[in-house]
Length: 374
Image 1 (cartoon, rainbow, N blue to C red):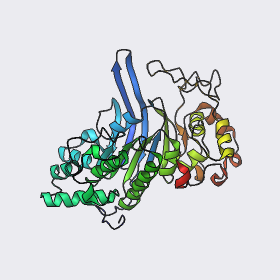
Image 2: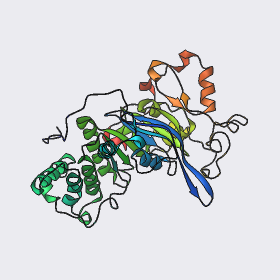
Image 3: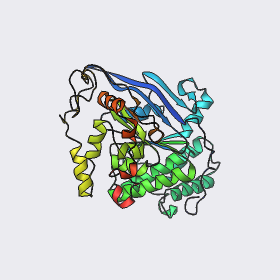
Image 4: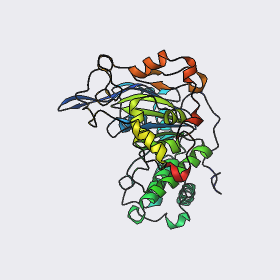
């Protein structure tokens, strides 16, 4: 239940099989300047009812990865699996079920809605197409239920409205309602809150969080803002991307509370922090050698981040490309992966007793409060 409304489906039993699995995903585009590897081998999993936040600067390949995961583009190499089945090997019936189970929420709430359709027409189109409703009365009742799920109440005030009559936050809630019409297992949110005011952003994130908890929907959440990732995915995972590759991946409290990769530290240092002591600590960790991002058509040798990395060591970072490997095998760090020669070397040298950091003691590692998280 959400408020007084019945959820569109029963909560599913938890499964060990990932909802979505990306294996060696690559996406290369042919351009006038030559091939551009927008995504260069990404391995990710989204589990039922869990959140995976994909974080990074603009142009790092987040949206390209998301579009491949949603089946909107065919990857150059690698595989996209939904519930253990490669989407390219699906039958027509399985493909239809996949298209209903995985829904995409776009970044721009103004461009994502057809300006000639009312809210009712937008919400009922998919319901009618897939035979979920049989009559106009049933479709209108279902559309009203969806609006209540996303807290657009009373729904009668919105059903016959056109997009230009709605605010940005209301439009984005309509987009969320449209995605819920198909009873999805997975929502792919591509910067879905970035164009909204801060107060509306928090409200929408709270709504998405309730949908995640009540309906057991999994999320692949794309954002460039680590503050948003920290708030929405505290009980989930964060994967940090740089120039088409994941450079750090792990549980959110670990990635936020004790970042290992220099790029992750730089992203955290760029977050606005009201606590002056924490803000000073974050800024001290930035210190990039360069603000210029290398071109995808002329990537540097070795680690792609080395021209900007404050931990750069000649002869190490610029000679070979680091692999994404487990940073620690201790139980409290299970699953943390980092792609960095220096971090891997330092961890290998450290004694086990030096790697038992308690995350409650790390500045900024506590669960964020709504009023201070974003």
